[in-house]
Length: 199
Image 1 (tube, helix red, strand yellow):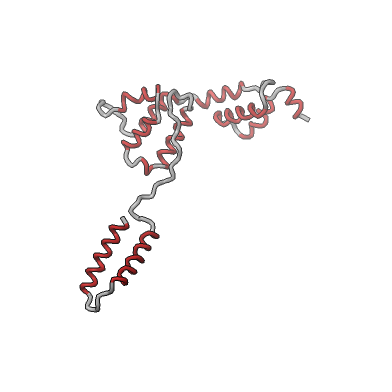
Image 2 (cartoon, rainbow, N blue to C red):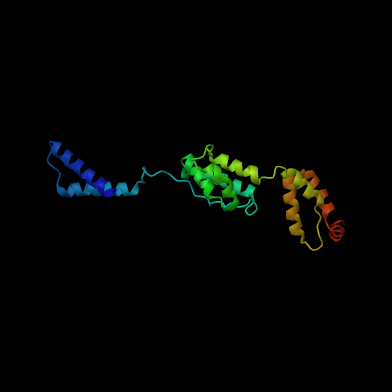
């Protein structure tokens, strides 16, 4: 690219030199001008190259909605499509990427409506994600989390940190009020731990 620009500038200089009434510049003067222009071109960043966003990692392949959990996969996939939008300029590219991020049963669910030869194919990538959501998302997620939260008790064989992690996960999913967390936590502790903390 620099050589082509260099040649173009040489041709322009030669044309200008022939038009000017003043004495023709000497060859060493032209060489100095060309070297200065070449240095300037090397230092200036290329403007014709499009700016690419920092590539974020791909989500794991969704196979059965269990590992990875569908909700986590969906968040990672949507973030990837949003943040790296410049990597997926067309809807076809987005659909192809969603299909590539599935495998096993999940891909088998998508396949009948993925092909363009079908009567009713997916038109948008978000339609594909929504279709998988209708299969793998728990419609009663909050209610089930509340049920599990109510039944949660710390076992004597568990470490407190493990119990606390599960307690906070369920509290978040069940949308438990922050004011209720501390009293609920004390109610769910083992008797020994409760007696230790009470004083």
